[in-house]
Length: 104
Image (cartoon, rainbow, N blue to C red; front, side, top):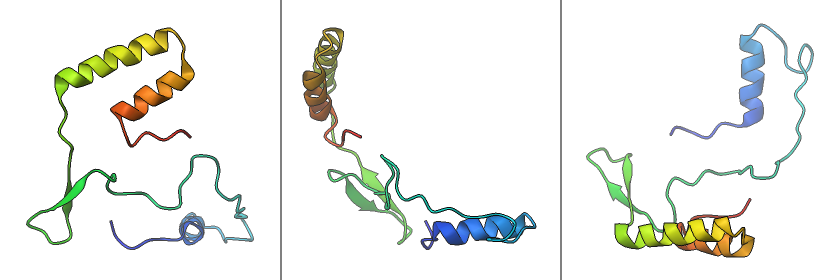
């Protein structure tokens, strides 16, 4: 993935590459985080075990096993809840199917 890069540094470099001067020709405005934005990106979910590969710096995510029949049943249940527009039941069902699910 490489080294982390500050967004401001990236913006300044892009402005320079376009032939302008940061702060003079083009202003950079810092707005802060917006809803749903993250400071860090997770590479693995909490229930995925990183698996080593031949290359020491490359890992694979081992997915969790899924019982297809049970998943189909849960999806049918989810569909019924959605058709009845039960918001709280929908959230609960989604979290059961996908534990990683988080409300924005």
